[in-house]
Image 1 (tube, rainbow, N blue to C red):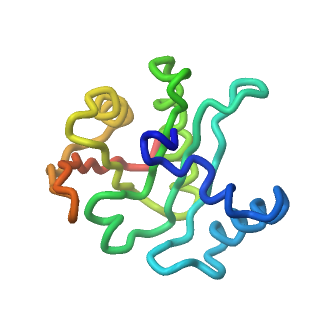
Image 2: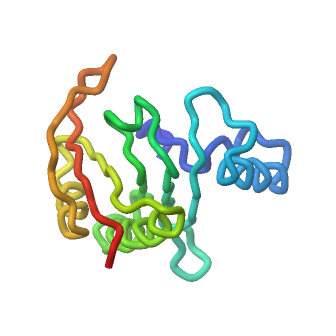
Length: 150
């Protein structure tokens, strides 16, 4: 997924060790020692048995960038595991996590050209608010709101 410009493991390659990376993820969730521009978030691996098929991030609040194009929930499925329902399962789990951290509704975004992701978000109850240009790149992002209630 690095070829797609996606940091799948949130800086694992920069950690000195696996325990150090786990501590970094715990700090991120607790909102401790956040890098500029970061907000507290819960990270969850998507597994099928022992195989990592994807990753889910649930941001506990939004900053200006996330409110425009990043959203509360981000997820990614490894290329060899796409189109098997894992994105939908992770998004549904993300709604549970969001509800647990006190969010009543969440913003979820996707590229305007990513039809599969748009469908996944809509199946999870996403209501399209608008389509906006990403600052710097001009890439169009679809912005959806999803209630976290059952």
